[in-house]
Length: 159
Image 1 (tube, rainbow, N blue to C red):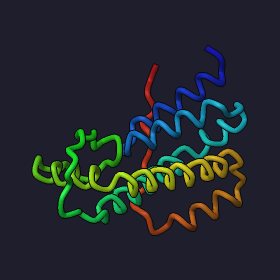
Image 2 (cartoon, rainbow, N blue to C red; image 1 turned 45 degrees about the vertical axis):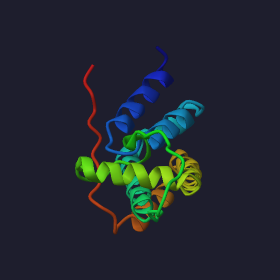
Image 3 (cartoon, one colour; image 1 turned 90 degrees about the horizontal axis):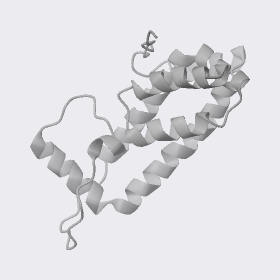
Image 4 (cartoon, rainbow, N blue to C red; image 1 turned 90 degrees about the vertical axis):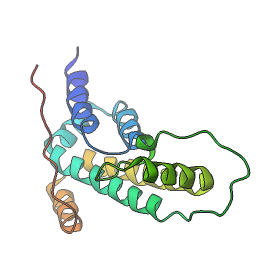
């Protein structure tokens, strides 16, 4: 395994261990595999901030899903969706609430796709910022994130 692949695996391990929506994890993993080693090193150098930012994006995503409007009637029965793919709530939800979320996701397909595309777009732009992680950029990031939840510390896996 090359050093670039090892670096990529280390970052991916941190990202996949986060309690965030699966589509965000997939987007990060897919985007990172096309980066050069020096860019991956910058991300690894700032991995805690990167993970914190991904959790922030997940929080924004969850809030937007919670704000989807519940529609009165759904004439077409749609297949249930895997909730963890679209969002990861902070607490475990009950079966009743899970059904409510399933209905929200089914009834608001267009809004859900729009939301996912928005998060993916922001994510791609953010990954570029972490790839070019100068001290000034990271200081700006820390300033913008100061009102967000506690930072996530990456659990480094021993080999």
